[in-house]
Length: 129
Image 1 (cartoon, rainbow, N blue to C red):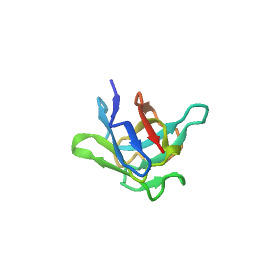
Image 2 (image 1 turned 90 degrees about the vertical axis):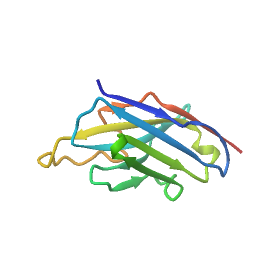
Image 3 (image 1 turned 45 degrees about the vertical axis):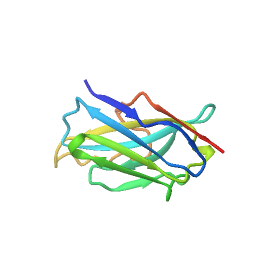
């Protein structure tokens, strides 16, 4: 059974930093497409950052230059380093994953569109001014 478990959310002051983690288990793919998404009350889910199976990254316009996505493949863990936080960053943050099954699997990764197979339960981030 595939599980994605986020951690690291919490409260921060504007201008501060937080690091989110997402541990992936039970998924035996050769490589992964992974992403972070967020949803604030009354707003649509927003793609924050993504990292493709080849290591390339892309970011939403609202976080580019402030957030950094990375992975530790040995630990099957995804990270989101969030710096220069703003009150508008307040949301529930979700990680998502989709596997790729070797060199013959040439499908493009979803990037920051929400077309992932597996999702975590979310971790709350609250930024105060």
